[in-house]
Image (tube, rainbow, N blue to C red; front, side, top):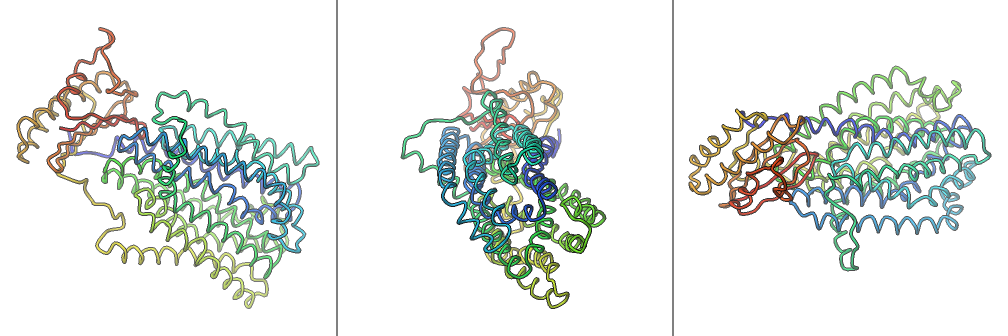
Length: 580
């Protein structure tokens, strides 16, 4: 027996990291593959048209992303509080709204694709490419929206591996169809957009495994009109993502206008390569940071502040190790990256290489800003998360990019390197401004804002899944209760329940159960026992003695002597809370 260690939580976080990276990799890979295939099969102008289409792509993804991320975090908090009914209602409401909004986009595609393309690339040779690309994207909006929404819920619902499987499958299909459509059909850039939509659609077969899973905590329920009011929970929690998507639209539109008007199509081609390299960074470190919204909501709902710090420290450590490797690779292989995106090695290719190496310096502050958004929205500090997002994607990046281009035009007569310089300065200013904002808003708090320790008076310890360790649980709890003048009746109840539950976990938890975390908290005269283990999926509330062969005697006793008992399978662990 020892003071609570990090092994149980860390082992589960490790399980989330690889699927998180794979999910982020697959999510970004579709955009990168489209860009590479289009640049090599059609040309650099067509590649630039994909970047010009980004404002429309952002709007298409808006509802699925915002309601998915906001809803999954809110659902995580609800599950942490053991409110499965509200969680199911919120999931259902976000799904219905996402489908309805997507259908509106689909119908509108026939009327708005051409005028929107004229607005995005006025008087440019990119018009026809841009129009054709966004038409198919708008047509497939319901599919894209539902796919993006579901991957957020899968991560929060103990199935990060299914989220990554869905996106990997979608992008493998996208890759194959890109090659077929662009190489063997006259579809042109429409084929690149169609392959993405079909990939998202066909891969939805993966969701069948989620529907049939016994680890699910939520399900689709039919709602009355008044029930849709619950969607405000997703909107409030998803405000930082809403701000991100809205400002991403402004950012994409503004930067495109700056580059087209001050530099021209060559500048847009260089920016497209830099932006795709940022997507490559996002594939890896974004996947690691993306674990935070999937896990933090549950920990925050349980008021497990110690666990939250473990989560954040681990994700940051892994992220910066990976980022250091990526930075070095960009510096060494900048020329090869430019060639991969269609550079012929001429003057434009040299410009791409120079800008890439400058642009690489923005990735470190970019990661920190991304971490702040993910963390603060997960603990319901949406004002800070929204502040970061607004600064990073609208208020600072546009003026710094404009200033960078104008100043660099005075230096070299071209101005392309000024785009990269503007991005680097923008990320640094955002990080510094957020530090000042947090200090003003939460004057006496640390970066994490949450308390260093869990609320109340706590006994927090871990035991190995052995009978020798289980025998010590009773003594440890009685000693804690005696020190804190808790009545003998409550002390005995807590000690008996803890011992019975840990013995059952050890007996029936399976090979995966190796550590058990036990927390006993005294808060406002309420004694709360939390037991967390990584054994087989087992809900003690549903258990009934149905055979002599599988008879867990202590469960019925615990139910009778406790004031209340709640269970949830969260972060792919059994989480049981018993109150006295």
